[in-house]
Amino acid sequence: MEFRQWLLKNVGGFAVIILALATLLLFLGFDISRRTDTIVRQRQDLASRSQALSSLALLRSEAERANKIKEAIQDFLPTGDQLIVFPKSLESSAKNNQLSFGFTFNSEIAGSVSEPAINNFTLVTHGLYGNFLNFLKSIEKGKYFVGFDLFDLNRKDKDFEIIMKGKVFSQ
Image 1 (cartoon, rainbow, N blue to C red):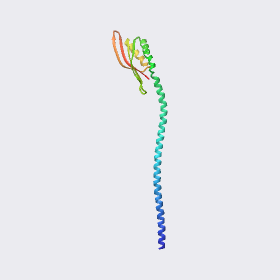
Image 2: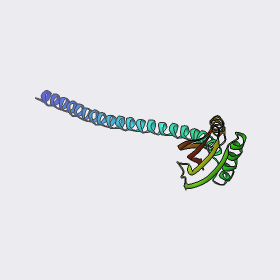
Image 3: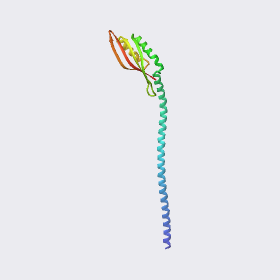
Image 4: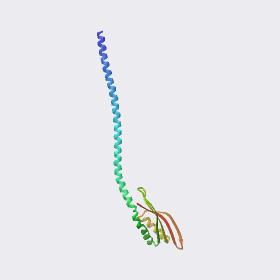
């Protein structure tokens, strides 16, 4: 019986040790799994932050480019004060094309950060049709960005009376 007790003690001891080791391995397995999940989340967070930093760097470089383009656009459109010269420029072009000239500003729509200001005007000329076409070409090549809403051509003998309503854009 003594051998049996000794055997039971040893087998029981080994069983306790094996049970303790299995419990320890199970605990370590859960701990490793938890740490692996933490590492995966941290890697995903790091990748997300890295992408955000890359996007920020790209935005900053594009912002510099956009500022240069914005300056060019602002140089393209005259300021409201510079429009004082607009009627004189049109009158000079009309006279160069042998047309009579009458001009009035009608209304102004204030601009915003994203939209230019719009200054409506009416222009009246008298002269030959060919001269009028040359006048329109000179307006198209001019330094002002102009749009026309109405052309009213009336024949008067060999000449034409042309009434135009349009708008000129400014900052």
